[in-house]
Image (cartoon, rainbow, N blue to C red):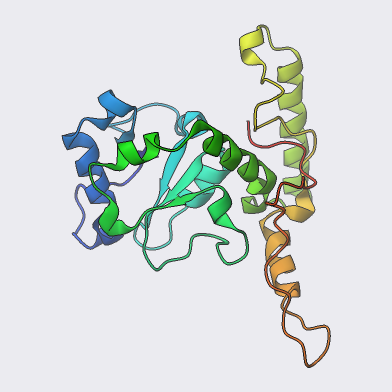
Length: 232
């Protein structure tokens, strides 16, 4: 598990509802980094490339900061399974996409020294299922609309595919069975903007006497969306 950022060392107790402070204290006092490879802290505590750390992590906490924080997007866009720790608060798109398919929610008062054991108790098969569900919807958390963004995505994907094809060793290649495969194109119409538009459209009644149509079809039932792959 990985969280790098403001952990409330110099903050008031109400910052992040005290969640970040509590998690940091648990991690340091119980030596989670050495025992369980759970890294919680600031850049000084956990130095190195932030994006690479996220991409190499299995679980990433999602919790408040001063208010809204980008932790959900950071996790999802790097293929890291979100651990949501914020009671009575929706995470991004929680009312639109079935986040339970690829995330875990822990009650704030259940956050204690048993967290490593809780995570270790999750079966590898369940983790793989969650990763495959995440691979179907991660692009819905990306803002890719617009000519400039679309062109940038095309360039980045082409560059990455070129690097993959010229990988010098088998270790650099992603196994075909891996949940996260390189993109061959980006489904711009299914990005965050497209998701919001679909959600709003679903609320338009067909007839005056009918209601909305519920959630966006997030395809977490195992069907593949237009995206041919996931982050990685």
